[in-house]
Length: 108
Length: 139
Image (tube, rainbow over all chains, first blue to last red; front, side, top):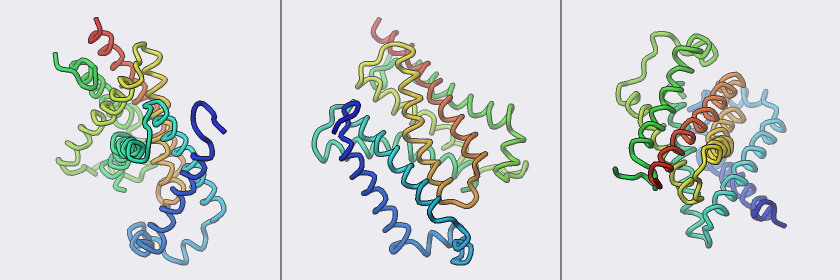
């Protein structure tokens, strides 16, 4: 099933992969550290509407996966390594720079 | 004149500079007070000099990304560059910020909206200026 040259099953799998990595990274691996850095406590997280939070996270991952898929399609990148290289440069040029701006100017 | 990803170096520098200046105007001159209020930043907050230097370099890194993709896609017209810039802004910087909005506690909807507008217009401006560098390089 392709839309604008991108395989939607691949996009959904990428979104799921994104979510799993995020879950493992901010949960079992570095969950405590992440809560400490953000000033969260188990009590404060108890007030959070998890369904809304997860819906926002899912939407983000879906849009990002569509974007990466589009760029891979535009570039004509084929194969695992070429696709991973493209995703890395997307992160470097666009996402990492954005996160850095927030760190520099907004004390995040 | 050297080229950066197929673009005239002068226009590449102008594109990065235009992106930076747009941010300066938006967060400083035009909406500076509003931004400090919503971001809870005090007027005497000044990032370290090395951070300010990094803040100056960042628009050029993003501009290089736009240039690389535009070159790969064979873009040559102004609107093509602007559209590419806007699409990239929506898919990547805005999604990166949206994570902070989704999972963070301090990044509110007003900051997210303001930063998103900055990215969309900034990327569009960088793309627009770059398009002239492409034309010049091909001439």
